[in-house]
Amino acid sequence: MLKPLELRKVKKIFKKYGIVYITGKGRHPKFYDPETHKSYPVKSHGKKTLILPYALSDLIDKFDLPGDIFEK
Image (cartoon, rainbow, N blue to C red; front, top):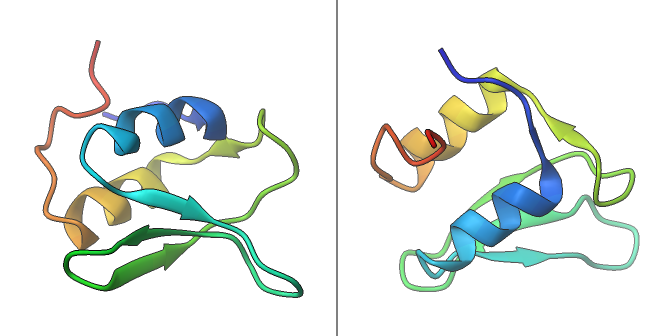
């Protein structure tokens, strides 16, 4: 079972896989994979915003990442 993670930690993990965090004017920030052109919007209220388990699972599925990516 996944536990909520802070946005800054998720960004750091995803950077290793080439997935970038994009913000824009008037848009929801999102994680974006430049190779596959897939994106996933996330809520953001600063770097300590918690990304909930359902969103972490969706991110794993969307970007075809290993299931244990958030395990320590």
